[in-house]
Length: 249
Length: 249
DNA sequence: CGAGTACTTGAGTCCGTTCAATCCCAGTGG
DNA sequence: CCACTGGGATTGAACGGACTCAAGTACTCG
Image (cartoon, rainbow over all chains, first blue to last red; front, side):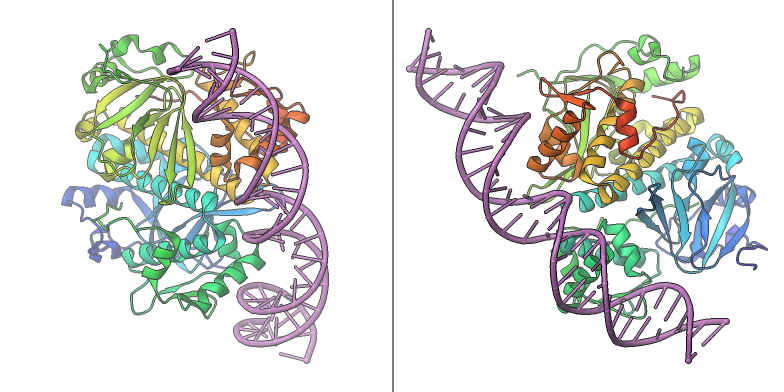
């Protein structure tokens, strides 16, 4: 029953993300402020809905561990997955700024989240311009990713789209340290791949089989092993953005 | 030849957007700061590329008049239109924050733009938290729109998609005062509609014809007249976001 | 060992594609 | 004044990619 509990939070100074060199370190003053902004932690079971469309969530979250995904649905149940979230990503910003959430977020694996009070976000802008800028950085990058997804769903063929998605998740996962080059495993179901690519489940399965036959991926243990990321990016006519030290809150 | 010239700028206090009640007024201090942040104006002919993908634009812009659109292309020329821009919208933020543009922006009609120096954006965050918050508001709203577009391209049928696009542009246009209920004219070509919906030109034409036969729209003078916006939103299973007083820079 | 979920595969259909031709209209230049 | 050009819109025909329907396998879990 206790699928979701607020645990005794770790101090921000010892945040698991701060030990990851992919992330830009905070100044001492920033860490202190973020500590005061943080109101707890949240653990989620796989499959749990963290944020529901239409609600007026009082919280903002940063992912500390695990995978999740953002999605929208049509009234008849058709679902579109918009993007995946990984450690360092922030969710709930739309709810905090635009007053209501227009998408949902589900946990894909078990997740641990850092919880912030949305009402205090304006004071963050007033007191810590650097952190405010970082939030805008995160929002811009999310927009940039959505642009790429839209190009993919709108203009790539099914095979290219699947290759793009696997390559994209591989590269993002690498940078968030949730996949490694040795073990490039993406915890997805084919239903989710279908709902991300805008394809039917059956056709997704046949498309993934083609990628498997080409030895670019292997489907295994309810997930996807990426075997040749370079071949996938080439097939998708895509290039990952250069890795830069990224901010987080 | 002079398709693009920096004209003598109007003062921000007399900004054409400030006379539009849809926009949140600035405080006197904000107006003063924005005035100092503004570096000129830019006039664009229809068809002109305002920002090109891959470049490192030194500017940020706010649309003062006219329509434009953001898009990305694949190396073989396939194009996806991501969103349309109208008065009050800001473009070039990604270039300012993430260092390089990953999409282009073209003028659809003649446009007048307000030009800002991107190098000074951080000082904006330091000195005017309210304005910084507004920029983040705009970024969040853009993300929200992209979410909707992605749902549309991924999961709606061709007819629903076309209905959604026309309804969407109608509602956004109303709020930016570039369409009126009496004269609901959208300045689009069918090629652009096709590249927005992720469809071929031929099928787009046939789909629009269906909407015309249903008397929901009328294609006229190289553009689209919206006749029954409510019927379009219903057909698309979509609902426009409630109108709120929105910020601009 | 039955039930549920994820994955797989085949068959037939249909939505959206490409190819191709035509029309309309606004420029433009002989 | 009219032929020529080119972009945009329109339409028909045929193809094919992606869809739905349907069955079956494999695995986990109570």
